[in-house]
Image 1 (tube, one colour):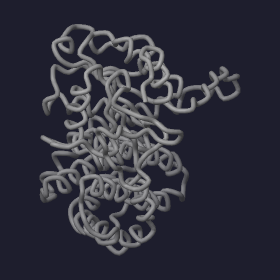
Image 2 (spheres, helix red, strand yellow):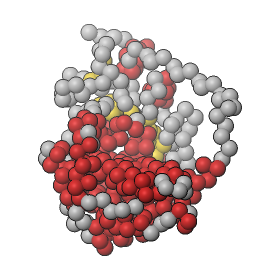
Image 3 (cartoon, helix red, strand yellow):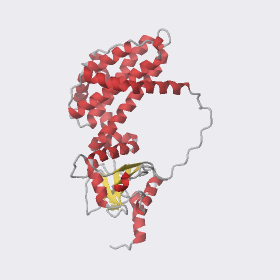
Length: 379
């Protein structure tokens, strides 16, 4: 694979739909946090809104387990008049995109368990957070029946919130992981990790596919040049997303131009091309796939440091990241090769998928019905 000249990198930049990427990352979301004690839910919301935040992000709704801190109408779930928060235009969504159920007990209370049942019926992802002394006991992180995921933390200090944030990113809808991280800084590290991992895996898979073609006489040079273009494009898109999520400012063209200058004018692409140029089909496909994975991973890690800390990207920094990721790259390459050798089961009848339950009118409407059964209504 040949090193791409800078003008070729600029050509790739011009083909990337920057506006679409920006719209994707600016998507709104609705995160609901519920706890038996409303103050515990409020504390969790503040912790996720930012380091030492003294506010709750307007796209987070907080309630106690009974839902008494909320009101609902036919279209939106919004904070009550006693605790108003006005989201930006278009922010509210009819139901939460994901939910945290925070408890200080090993098992969910009746209110939280009922809310979880409602969430499951509407296929809304949820995370159980066990905090306090109970969160330090054995078995606190083991998901119970009907629970999608659990995390146990002793408190809501910064290190504990980092674990909580990682679990939240895992259960959040894939299309909302980066928008969540863009608005909620504690979610950025795990979101960056997943983005880099997914891009590295995609580039490794692509290199495996073209590597098979390089074994055909006459196709090696063409596919090698194609590798450079596709891998570079994926790396630039990854870097642009990292920069946007981290809060970098500037027009899309200026920002991606800055990224291309930092990457294309220096060590990164040339080093990756140099590593790959010595790998010919005779050596085998695994080394090429491993290098594609490791090179992409190294670029992602370096861009995170540049975007979040202003660190200068140097050959020494890149070399360290590259060697750190090479073992992962070899493992990814071996998995891809092994999976390609498994017999295909496409002709076998696939088991029927369970039918998804029909969405119910509204989450908080159901909570209100539960409350109405317990207390007389007063106007």
